[in-house]
Image (spheres, rainbow, N blue to C red):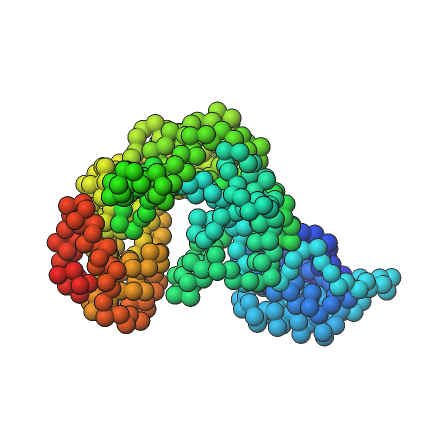
Length: 532
């Protein structure tokens, strides 16, 4: 009697899977196969049996079992219900090493049986796999799953990527001309994916690396958490457009705010403000004029939405700006998706300043699978008005809109807060978090500002850092927020700068230009920051 026969007699075997079959399928299919075995609850006598009867090379076997235990952990299949049948001690040692590396709950149950399927079976040597097992921990799903269109109409794998996708001749792709398939299949994107397969930590992705080094959750990590199976069931070894699931679109740079952490590339208000400081005869030759002109790409976006309709595998849209809720193309896009009857399969994430909300939007959103509405709020009261000024940029309006959304949104809509912590607001993090408790947001995402550098916590004067850290450490935060707070305190503890002249010059310049008084709205830290 073989080991498999004995297991069938002893247990209720709900899966009996030949491990060798995994080497002949794409990685995404391997993941989905394991995912299909997940149950809310297993009965005590039920077992998932995985057997190996072929001779697999050491390297391939190590990579496979590392991924095997990693995915069992991610999917949440308890090791208690998993039984492995392998031909010898070599395989047993590799399994134990992989399990120890991943640390997946209880010890693995492994049966060594060199005759797992009877005398008639002749082992096959396996040294290669269709699936890319053993991908580096630094791999990012976004170059496979996503394309991003910036406010000025350039393509990238995500909005944090420093660079733009180009054609083979070095020219930029144009969303008014080029299809999503053309961009995805470009040599530029293929090379980017190859770098990730090889474990290269690209400088273009430095924001994520910096956030992870500081202990914060980076965009690549957040994406994997947010999109579940679609961010995991990826055929890493392939460059097929079938992997493309998300499109992130910044609808130009039209915005009614001129936030102090923003730039003319993402805000027409800031661009207009800067142009006023440039002599009329020189304006059209300026980079600011160029940003405004390039931001008009959305006025000719029919090709983009035609391309979207041709890629039915796409399930997620990420809309930003500028301010996405200002753009009429955005409304037309929503209406088109509803009219085509595909809205029910689509989830949308928004980054909005919270100044615009109306019943038409709330009604359209009902038709979609999920709406994740992330409102950017970095501070409260008059400090908000100073940090995020503009049309309808009044704290009372924002607070009223948040409450209206909370009270009138459909059940498919998640109200989310997006907060960016910089030199300007770090001291007031306790007040913001206390206000957050009163609202009842369904999701929170905090991040640290790294660019521009003169506003980053990495350049905060030590006096201001010590002041903020003391206050933060004496405040009681919710457990959900505490890990991020710990990251902030860690950054503050490393402050060594005596002063930040660029910060002071920037703040005073905006105060003069806008008739504002940052120091008066932030009196507790104004002196430590060098403003008074």
